[in-house]
Length: 366
Figure (cartoon, rainbow, N blue to C red):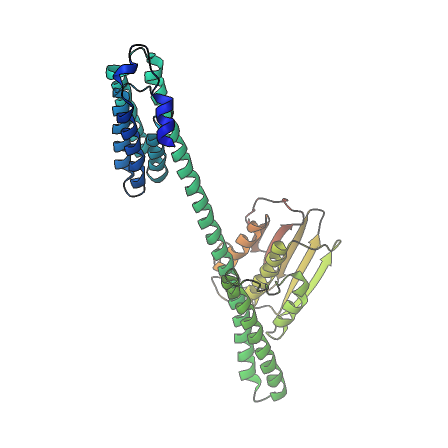
C-alpha cells in the first residue's frame, strides 16, 4: 500500500515530462526503500542512509517530493530519533534534507516550484525527527519517574525497618538488663519482665514481618495488607516503655479527628522514635506526649526533662532517627522541629496537616 500511495502521490506528470519517466523504476525503488525499514531496529543509521538514497533516486527520476514519497525515510528518521541522542537524529535529518534539496534543485522535476523543492523536504523530515526525540524524552521521563517512586518506596521501608528495630531492640535490651538484675533479689518482678520481654520481641517480629511483606505484596495477588499502626495504638505504644522504666503521659487538646493513613503512620512513628531516643539518651524516667488538634493541622510534641547521658548527645540534625522523623513529616506535607528546651531536656515537635493538600515548609530548631 505504501508503494502504491507513494507513486500515486508523487508521480505527477508535468507537461513535457510524462514520457521520460517509467513507473517501474519508481515501484522498485519505493519497494526497496520499504524493505530497508525491516532493518531499522538493528541498524537505524544504515536504514536512514539507504532510504535517503532511494528518495534521492526517486527525485532524480522526476518524482515530486511529497510526504508519501518520503514516507519510508520519515519512518526511519523517527525510529532513529526515538532510540538515539538528539544530536545524532538531527544530524542525519539535516543531511538527508541537504541531499534531497540538492538533488531536487539539480535534477528534479522540471517546472516544480522552488518552494516545494526546499521547504517541502525540510518540513517533512524535521517532523519525524522532532516527534521521535519527543517520544524518547517522554519515555525517559516515565522511566525516571518510576525509578523515583521505587527509591521513595525503598526509603519509606528503610525508615520503617529502622523505627521498628530501634524501638523494640532498645526495649528488649533494657528489659533483659532488668531481668538480670532482679532475677535474684526479686524473682517475681524478674518473671514479669521476662514475660514482657517475650511480648516485645513478638511485637518486633510481627512488625518486621508486616514491613518486609510490603516487598512481596505486589507479586502476591489478593494478599491483604497488615494493620498499619497509627495514633489509635498510641496507648499501647506508650505502655511498652513502662517496662523499660519510662513513664509516658499522653494528653489531647481540641476536637480529635482522624488523619489520612500516611499521616497517621507518620505521627505514630515520630512518637515512637522520639520516645525511643528518650530511653537511649536521657536520664529521665518520664516523658510527655501532647496532641493538639487545630483547624488544619495536628501538633505533636514529645518532651522530657532529663539531661543527656553522654557528654556529647546527638545533634538535633544528626542521626538516622531524627533524619527519618523529618522525612516522615515532610512526606505528608508537614514539618518537624527538634532541639533542647530552655527549661532543660529535649523536645520534638511535629505539625502534620489534617486536610489533603495542606502543607508547611520545614522549620529548623534555633
